[in-house]
Image (cartoon, rainbow, N blue to C red; front, side, top):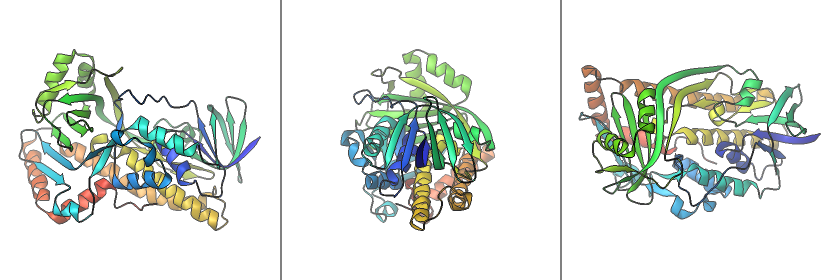
Length: 403
């Protein structure tokens, strides 16, 4: 039987980030992942993340940021959000007083998930305190002092702490019977990469309409964007299967022709993908010997681009608590030593889930009164520097403690 202080189930971005954050900790870490991630540096993929300031600093601090090629880190310096057929709009610009006061050159970076994951794999694979096992977990047993994990390759690992970083359909969460609250957004995300007739101006664009939310996320090429289009499932299925000319026309119209003609990028193996959207919140982020991070603990609507940043914030807080407990000679797997992590991250997750739910409902439908309130609210916010400053701090992660 092998032994490990911490066993992380899941070698995705968030699980790897936690291992990297603990690179100097006096503990032995085992990562369980089914297979090495597929990585094709020359193939542009349609899964991207908007990396905020706090996530960027974390990746820099653990040595992963340097492993992401500079031409794969696409900065954006502006955000433009508006409602279709309305005067409602709000804009953020890194040249504005409120952004300059934060001393940032950009608001964030658009990066393909595969490059973030690969950079973290490169970092973690160099750590003396990490062992990576390519296998699938089969059974999990917990007693007062240890957790015992059985793998499909026949190995058994005893650990002080099991971390579930295994995504929205978490095996760890299911094994531990940790109650999950979920709500269907009744929307599906359509993702793909597109080329625009006009330059995107290093701007992240987002338009709300009664039935959809459409975001354009800029790449380094000034005419190339990744899109996330939140739609009713039947409409998403129609658009993912229609011919390119029909899709291009529908997309250009939905985007208010803001950047001229939009065309589907055809240099991908799978140019259009769809993903059902569900809000999830686990009632317990921790139990004795077990804790959840990232999508295993919570998932939110992608309209704010906060998904992976929320997961990275979990990893930052978890690493902070583990290091503090190790320094004090505490048992890192006891629930009483996991409660502080659970308390802090549950509060943040609830706040964001609530905010995303309110925004989703507020911008749904054509009710004239709601439309008027939306217009007044966004326009007023756009003119109030203090409020805009608070919003942008939340978006770029400055309200979250750094490593």
